[in-house]
Image (tube, rainbow, N blue to C red; front, top):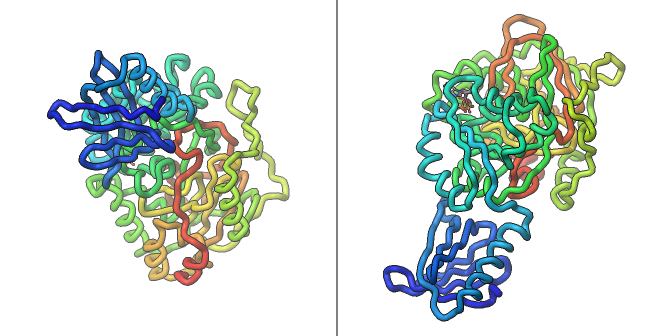
Length: 466
Ligand SMILES: Nc1ncnc2c1ncn2[C@@H]1O[C@H](COP(=O)(O)OP(=O)(O)OP(=O)(O)O)[C@@H](O)[C@H]1O
């Protein structure tokens, strides 16, 4: 049916032809635009008038609307043309039409533009896609946690989070404390990046589109659920869900104590890092982990294999259970590796990016049931750290010999001094003993690509760089 070429007369009298070929919608007027069907948001007929909404990508993405009077074809042919187009643009790729969305907007996040961005840019896309919206603005810290904890699960297909990683952290913890935590955590989340730290959005959309709010809105409309591992951070008997990172030493200093510099945006972290470098002291911790893999080449190879074969074999956490998984790694058996050498910083987590300037876990996989741990030994100079920061956006630092990299099931930290910093998903935590373990596929996100999007630099190039 889509082989039929429609001729549309727009309001200003010009003609546009619409046709379909090879998963693309072709829009031809003075110019020809071939649009991936994924970017088609809707098509509607009112009388002889056709309205088409789609996302185009120039430098960044934007919503476009085209409308006009259709010439020559009969009404039923036009209806069938529209039905088939929408079928291919949604049903064939498994995306539900007209998603029911809980939208949580943090007016306080990042540069405080979230409300304006939602109203002007995001809402029109979601409305065009005929999503039903239940929008709420957070009024205080912890509000998003409460919203998630008491959410009526059957009312929503996804939760849209218009903010930074801090609100994602709150919402995941609210869901984890829901009366039905497993069901609650299975509702997919989709971030719209309007915070200071937007690591999750970078991981889902990649470096190029990670800060593009229209790309994020497209993900809300067309992304498919992607299961992700979540981590339990247990400190003083309290369990917190972490989705992205735990930072100690230099990297925590970069996050903590720079909140007053929010106006700087992401540059704030680089500033914090440089400031921390002046001290250049090892972080006072004893770290031990339950390793799965420590060979960088092997981890790199398994990432490449995963890219060519995206289906995961990791079993889901306690699929039958209705409660949060029990903690597994509570014993002190011999499998724990204790790190003896001093460390400048430790980063552990999931997802390649923790910020636009830093791809900390380039070989991270959403659902391998493992966390990645980066150990920066002291066998490095200040100058080299600065050089490494230069290549950090592409993950090149991974290959540096002073970096030890571990894929682990669990790890533990004992502070050796009172003076230190711990940040969990960018939030400040007490610098006290804690343990972390993974829960395979406990969380869910919307994703356009079915995996993290990170262009990890080739090893050869990196070896030269180091
Ligand atoms: N109305 C509000 N007033 C003050 N704080 C709020 C409000 N709503 C949410 N918050 C808090 O704002 C914090 C920051 O949220 P988020 O991470 O999404 O944005 P951000 O700008 O990236 O933050 P950060 O600078 O901490 O990384 C969260 O901890 C959340 O609890």
